[in-house]
Length: 382
Image (cartoon, rainbow, N blue to C red):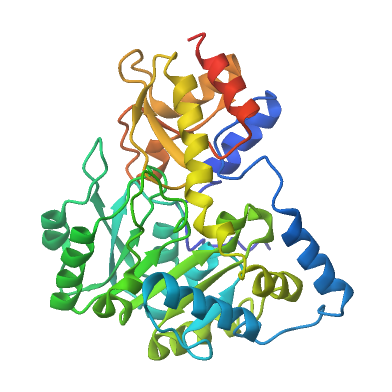
């Protein structure tokens, strides 16, 4: 007798990143869809992890993470954001930023709780909410600059609202939150006693001399936030799947209850490596200018295509509109470009629950210059 599984996520299928990457492989296209570099990470960090393994750091480390790494993170946070994070009680090492977001939501959401989500958004947010019995309240960002309509946020809050998720620098659009945004957010969450899930995995990938406005800069926000970070995005090692979460001691107790029965702990060798490598401050302080040069190079090449750029001030990504020369739905247009021009992108409608289509595609520009040049050259034939 067969037993049929009643999925907790009945409306979720394979992610758009997997679909488009498979299509890129099939057509041998240049993959500017999924957010990963195609260049090597720093050899010094490779040497650090190799040394860690050779010197016996291959067994379980503490559930909360390798203590010297947590101490190094606390020192970095103090220097960057003037926030004191206790490495023993406020920081937990996680297998990636996405895991940290999931664990934070799992720690706070009960059945029927509502969470404000700003769309377009990273594709894990809404499934993370729903699998925990919560309800995602979708609030659209203002197109085409993807700014937050805080009045609309305020109007979307109900007695059931438990939290709001923010993401800056923003995936998929490259928008960044300002000091004014953060002060407005602070007023709203204090008024309604909300938690904040702050996705800051692109904290160092910020351009044009803008400042990253971490919630950790704002004491009233920091006290009610779970702040999620990524080593992979900072150090070009996305395949290592390493990140961390910062929260107040009381909130971190709830977070760790989820963590201890899921991953429990993370691979030890990269934690030892990161603990040593964090002393190289230039590796993260200089990252914005390094990646901005790639954004600018790609923009120069794309200027000869019919695409219209939408400003990106951070992240791995820039969005481009094709509304001026095609009415094809973005999901179809992304497939068309892969099959006929050999360039793979991500349709921005994939980041909306209702598949809102503004005729915009997301391009990952954190690639070698030759990769970006080849992609733009192909698109110049449009």
